[in-house]
Amino acid sequence: MKEPYQSILRPIITEKSTVLKDKNREICFEVAKGANKAEIKKAVEQLFKVKVESVRTQNRIGKWRRVGRNEGKTKNWKKAYVKLREGEKMIEYFEAV
Image (cartoon, rainbow, N blue to C red):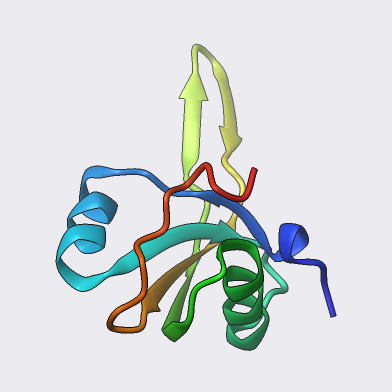
């Protein structure tokens, strides 16, 4: 079992994630590649002291990028959408720092 800070790497703050946060009570995080849904759920509940309803995950493939004549690939990573239960307070990202 991993520590909560090993499972949850950082919040993803984009236009889409802020809309999901306001409408569906979903928060988006970058998580460790080896983390499963149960570990992510437990980590969010421990770090932010809230109850989680569901977790959805995505494996994101790195893209090929070019800078001048140098070419490389960005890293593969994993994204998790965490939905909070009804009645739970919304997470502020800097609470658990």
